[in-house]
Image 1 (cartoon, one colour):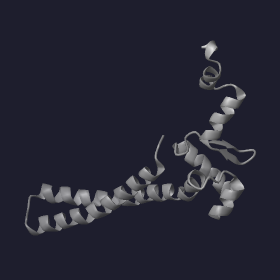
Image 2 (cartoon, helix red, strand yellow; image 1 turned 180 degrees about the vertical axis):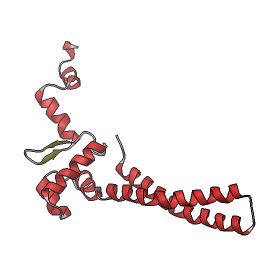
Image 3 (cartoon, helix red, strand yellow; image 1 turned 135 degrees about the vertical axis):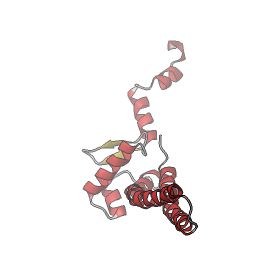
Image 4 (spheres, rainbow, N blue to C red; image 1 turned 90 degrees about the vertical axis):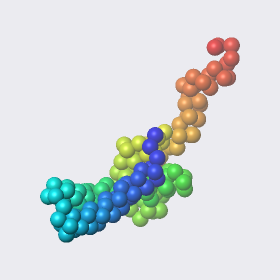
Length: 151
């Protein structure tokens, strides 16, 4: 199980750290050139600053792609909206866009236990999955609890 909010904060912190380190290494590079330090040290600070500025867009893209899923994630987990049509109306997206984002959240592991029925467009929360298993008689723990002699 992955925690969506924690991962979102980690990616944002990583983006800001790269952005900040770019300026730090750039200042170190300028100071190194001004103080006539060995070429290797100046070259290393230059490479570090270039790598920070080069990695920042990729980190921002990763953060933004995860950030786009936040409205759907919070609507499902916090607001308990389980219908695709209601989610589309709530977020202002099309039903197909909501469907693809739900699928992406499931594939990334941010909606553990939730089941998504594509035909009806209903998302079943984890508690309902447990109740369905108990009602169908497929839950072994409920079977033992209801029939202690069979254990």
